[in-house]
Image (cartoon, rainbow, N blue to C red; front, side, top):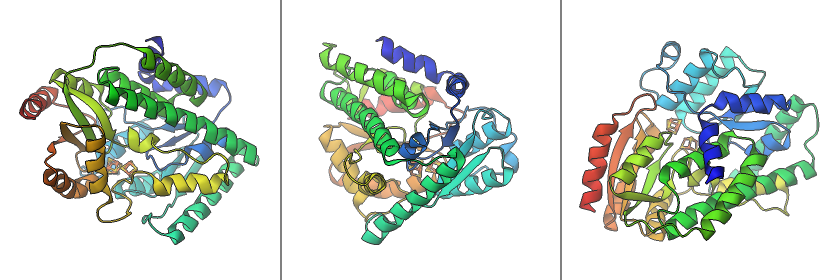
Length: 370
Ligand code: SF4
Ligand code: SF4
């Protein structure tokens, strides 16, 4: 499908995307975490761009971040220090995991870009006071953006932005639902490309492309895959080869609990309420990540319900090495799945280096077993 190819082509060269955005005189604001209020950045007239590591060897970042920080933060810092992110005009760091918070400190001190903001969101997301606090933090971030943009972000700007992001999220959810209902409708590597592309490309273009892809997939009569139905869970997965390896091992991905997946795009923001309160509400109510807290069982219940809803034959936990928040949650999530008799496996990955041969064998063994 030509729209899917556009995503594949675009994500091969993020700096080419950046050049096109710059040609429209837009400032590019980078971010690393799915708690970044993209609607506010877009409403200010800026381009929100999720940062992924270019996967180059870590040399310069070695002086600032220990080897036991996750490869995402080390890789992105390396890209920044080596000038590969010079197209950025600024960056936003939501207050989430320790690695991102420490990266934020280093980033602020190195001061390479014009705009910098820490968005200190609440950690506990289950109280009214947290909701009030979240709203206050977003109002402050809006003011920071207004100062950088030299203009007020109006109610109309916010409404337009919320509608745009809702459309993107709605169509991504639709594509995932179509894939879960008719597995094999779309290749897993295509799913990866459109989700990643949606985080980095021009959002107006993304909204149009996704609408076309969702409409085309609804009509497609691609054969239903007989592969084992797999849900993946973890922080990020920035390797299309891993998705392909799961497919080649006899699996088909029918859902995920990833920051580069459903955790990022799920949920809609109310379009007719107070925009800031509505943006805060989506963050309060959506699937939480392990750097946040809703209850001692929220993530366990969620992974079981995700597996059940997608009729998963198995769950694959894919963690970046040294990602402490996800590693701490893993034993308890596994316990929840084991209790329900849902088969699961665990792998650790590096952004910079993959031993795909070994991983493929592990996927084959697991998929053969379930
Ligand atoms: S796992 Fe949580 S803290 Fe980490 S990038 Fe995702 S949303 Fe942010
Ligand atoms: S949540 Fe994990 S993978 Fe994401 S930035 Fe933090 S430590 Fe790294």
